[in-house]
Length: 484
Image 1 (cartoon, one colour):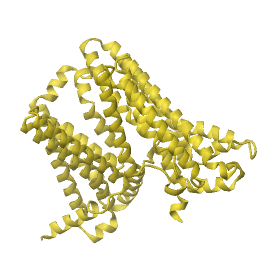
Image 2 (cartoon, rainbow, N blue to C red):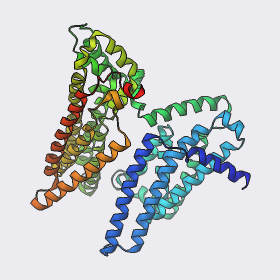
Image 3 (cartoon, one colour):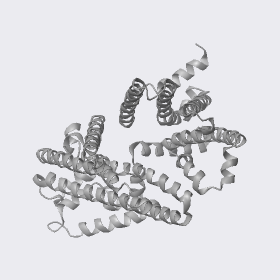
Image 4 (cartoon, rainbow, N blue to C red):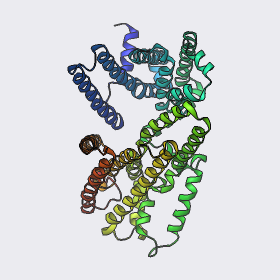
């Protein structure tokens, strides 16, 4: 084996062959389920002669391209960026060059394969920007979000926002070639920025890169900005600070122990954590409502259809609405221990009951605010069309989110695990299938049935989780039983 191949193999061994962290394992397991579903769907369609073999092969190629995209953008690039240190450069003098070569080859391979599976070579610039933006985002660069947003919204921009003459120029053969060249040159520039070339500037930039990537992996980027009092979180901290001063100022005997238990988890366990997101969704909904009314005609209808289809994806915000509770529970062990020693925590025998009640009230409040905001945005954009279906999706997402709010925090610390994520996904699929079947049999649609089923399942789950939490040792400090 040549020296170059040995260096490539060493880099691959370090970045890809080691055991993946919890987030990657959960994502990989969910991706495997989706892959199996796509394969089963393709086989069924082939057997029923509703899909020709060429389309089935393209679909399987698309699944392979998706896996390569996740492996390259989510796993390889962030870990390769963390390898690009001055110490490692001494151990392998050509390391930076090899890292950039592997990263460039991976980007080109994934982009070409994904474009080929789409069946339209004119998609190359959009696909290249999307994949590059994903890797930059997981690498801790907020500029990558722009590269994700632009190609994702190209259908809307080309049909509604941009003049037809501009769209015709960009989509011509010459325009696609020029855009592809710009994207390739831009990718080369981004890779040079992602893998800086040494010196004091490099060391400082690499340290900030590592910090951003760690916050991204831990889901702490937003929480860190809140806790540090930066401009992004200043307005939210103002609400939380006022509530904390008010509750702490009452002193022992007058303070509400339940509120104090929730305060120990920090700003992410306060309703104001979601204030900016709720306001942003409402502003976007009002802006789209104004644009649709102003444009009128076919372009307004295209914008309305596109926006209505995108609202379903916003429901995923509800799925994440309780994730920060588990993260906060595992990050504030010191605060929990101090509060447990103070009289503000109240009777330790009632700690779990009070904490469970506060967690339930907080989670239900956030779920209600998010669901009502999403439904309001839907009404602003598309009126009452599909409102029952969207409400059912919100209830199902809320059921999944609530399934992990209560539990034995002293033992496992709460939070999502691979097993919990898989069980929640399978249960959600089962509920969706039952609701679809009931809606088809009754002719009422699956929306109302999904609401009833999701609420019923959530009630059963919460009752069992409530009993389990009350029977567990006091929750604060979390994970002490597992650490002992």
